Length: 320
Ligand code: A3P
Image (cartoon, rainbow, N blue to C red; front, side):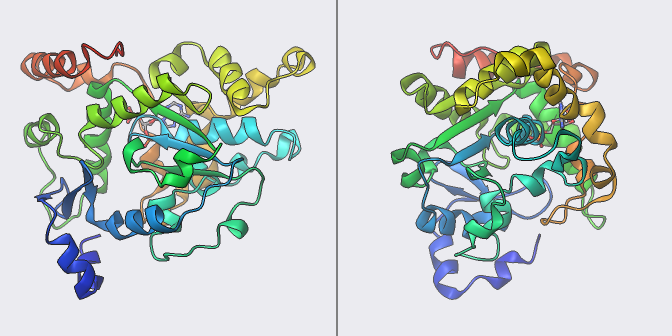
């Protein structure tokens, strides 16, 4: 992770020098690019993705804020969209991790290659790809085509604890892990991958209100509360609604079950595999609960964050 900047050529280095810079939570750098803190590891890939990606009208993009349920949404979208393309007991999710089946554009496909062969990468059709980029920074062809975006976010208090735990687990052994107090300070100031959270989420929220047929805006908590109706909603949005027969046969419940935290966590590849970025798949499955923040945050931290949420969200109509 830390050596990536050494591989940058002089032209790219001088471009990057113009961006504000901060230390990330794990000792690498974030660069403030187009209004968000971009991890140095993906900066080049983000720019290549923006420059070269050509969306097709049929593309589906899973777009998320990190630690808000990306892994879950990938599994759900994959299983719903392609449910008639494989036998039920042969769902690829039983053999591959959600991040291997729905690949990240900037964290994976464009990571070391400005011109990845997307046709070969996407085994199933229509293409299903994913990103953490804010709406404003998406390649124009995604915004201008008829491609669809499925977005998920989450209560920022839970997202913060999920992120801190994730990075703590990933921590470079030569570095002291960031204490919760230090992480809170950075979090409060929006300094984390793709932060600030509020700008990112509100970008998708506004775009989804303007164009609800293009962007489906989901919340982790709503999925937790009633996965079956959220799945029906998702299938409808993707243009593959569940038929009456499917509903009678329990297909919705089956998808919910196969994609559940309890099930995916126990799949061999998710217990032992490693993502292309070097992150063990186990890192994507921690507790899968709503409200876990209450086990970590002090009343003072909660009060500050609640004030911040109120300040950033109050006129948006979006609540957590
Ligand atoms: P916690 O750290 O709170 O447990 P992302 O996939 O965006 O990285 O988000 C990770 C969060 O989603 C983690 O939250 C993880 O446990 C949770 N998660 C992963 N798979 C899930 C699933 N199938 N159902 C519900 N939550 C899931």
